[in-house]
Amino acid sequence: MFLALGATAVASVAAAIPLLRRWRGRQLAQQHVNGPADPSLPARDVTRTVAHFTGALFGHTLTADDEAELVDRLDFAQRADAGWRNDFAALARYVDRLARHEGAASFAVVTADQRERVLARIMTAPVDDGRSGRLALLSEDERDRRRARTDTIAFLGGLYRRSGVPWRVRGYTHWIGIPGDAREYTRPGMETPC
Image 1 (cartoon, rainbow, N blue to C red):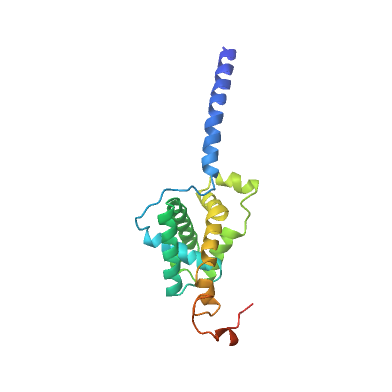
Image 2: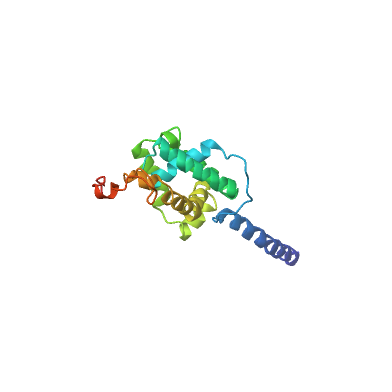
């Protein structure tokens, strides 16, 4: 009797191990998954939240021109690779949850102090240690934070740096190399707070 129960238990555990490994792998999946091209317009509120989060990563509150440019670039990325729609939606939900935890209605309306606390919660703790991995098995917030830190934020950083926003922040009125005021370089630029 005990031998039969023991054999059944061993067989059950052996059958459960691959299922548990697959479940753990899905819980800890952090990589962006490419999707097909999708010409439909992405969710505007998600895209705006991600645009403002991107500006906040670099310490900037977006102007209307900055927001329009980043939204346009984010829309293009989501239409070219529908996988970003899932990643951006998860990031927008996550930063909105963190903003509500800080007392704001959403990330779009956070104060400067609240924005810094939200960014600190995302960026300060490491995501490549065992503690984060164990926590991610149980916590949706930790899974979203790991996903954002390992893939989405790197993509947003590249998108931001290749946009016109950093140039406008530095005081340029047009992209470098685009015809404009040929003597602009001879005048002193804006003072930076460095």
